[in-house]
Length: 465
Ligand code: ATP
Ligand code: MG
Image 1 (cartoon, rainbow, N blue to C red):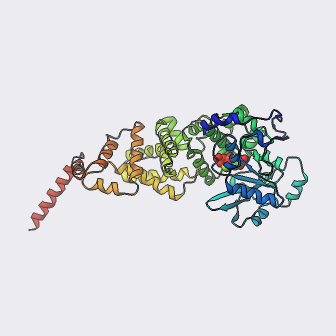
Image 2 (cartoon, rainbow, N blue to C red; image 1 turned 90 degrees about the vertical axis):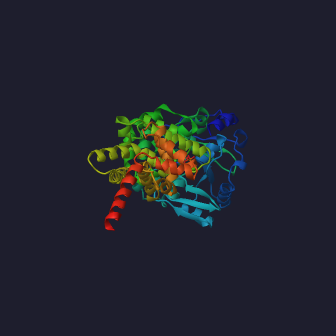
Image 3 (cartoon, rainbow, N blue to C red; image 1 turned 30 degrees about the vertical axis):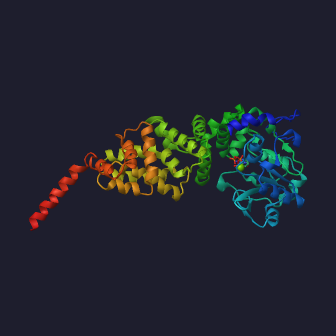
C-alpha cells in the first residue's frame, strides 16, 4: 500500500481552490474534483458497488462511495471493500434490494449482498448541533434513539444531509465521496489536501470527537501505520491524555478493533504507535504492566512481525495465536508465581490461563473459538518438553501442535531459555522413524524413569509367581 501511494499519488491533482479547514464550528464548504482531475476509474470499483449506486440513483436518491474505498482508490490501491452513503432511509434501501438486510444496534446499516461481496449502505448521518436543514427535518422523524451499548453518543443516530454526513466522519481522508452520477470527488473537509500531504487529521474539535467515540484514537494510529501518514499535531495531542477513555468501550467492540489493528498487515508499526500514545495500556493492562517491569517486548514484536509477513504472503493468521503472544508475559509470569507457591506445573498452567483470560475479558472479549486454541497453545508449551518414548509422536499428532511449535520457536527467537527444545522439535519433524526413536530414547530423564518402572514391574511379576 505504501509503495502504491508514493507511486501513484502524483496522479491526483488537488484542486487549487481549497476550502478552509473544518474547525470546531463545523462549517463545511465543498471542493469538487471533476473526473478529469482525479485518478479514479470505474474499472477499479466493484460491480456490486456500481450496481448499488445506480439502483439508488434510478430511484431518485443520492448515492456515493465513501470512506476507505474512495481513500484507497485515490491512493492507487485496491480497496478491500466499498461503503455507500445515501439519502435513502434504511427501510427505503432495503425495499430496493432483494438480497439486503438491516443490521446494527448503534445505527442501522443495510448490507446488500451480491454473491460473495457485501456492500455496506448507510443513510447520511447528521448531528443535533449542526445547522438545521430542510432535508434533515424530513429525516428527523426516522431518528433512532438506541446508542450507548457501543459507547457512542446519541447524536450519532440522526439522519442528515451529505455535508452533515461528511463532518460526522472521523478523519478528513475518510470523508471523501465519489459518485457514478457525475464521476466527481466531493470534499467538504479538505481531505484531498491531507491525502496529498499524507496527514491523518480528525474532523472538528479533536477532544470532542475522541470523547464522543474513543475508538477514533485507535483508528488514528491504525491509519497512520497502514498508510505511513503523520498524525496532525492537534489530532495527536489529546490522545495520550484521553487514552484511558477506551475503558468505556464494550469489550466485544474492543475485540473487533484489536483484530483490525493487528491483522491488517501493519501490526508492528501499529503496536509501536499504540504504545507511544498510551493506547495499548487500556486494552492490555496486564501485558503493559509486565512489559514495563519484568519482560521485554520482543516476543510481542516478533509475533506481530511474523503476522505481518504471513499476511503479505497470503497465509492464514489466527487471532488465537496473536492473543496467545499478547497475553504470554502475564501467563508465564503467573505460572512461575504459582509454581513457587507449590502448585504443580500442569495445575499452575490451567489456573494461570483461566485467571489471565478472565481479567483480560473485561477489556477485550475473547470469543471461545479463539480462547480455547489459545489455551491449548499455552498448555502445550509446558508439555512439549516431555517428549520421551511415545510422547513425541502423540504430541505431534495433536491438532494444535503446529501452532504450539511455532509459538515455542517464537519464544526462543525472543530470548527465552528453553534448552534447545525448539531445535529438537525441528529436527524431530524431519527425522526418519529410526532417528526419531533414538532421539526419544535419549531425551534427558526419560530412560531412567522407564527402566526403574519396568524393574519394579518385573519384580512384582516375579513375586506373584
Ligand atoms: P478500512 O480500510 O479499514 O476499511 P475505512 O476507512 O473504510 O478503512 P471502516 O471502518 O470501514 O473504515 O469505516 C468506513 C467509514 O466510516 C470510514 O472511512 C469513516 O468515514 C466512517 N467511520 C467509521 N468509523 C467511524 C467512527 N468511529 N467515527 C466516525 N466515522 C467513522
Ligand atoms: Mg471500509
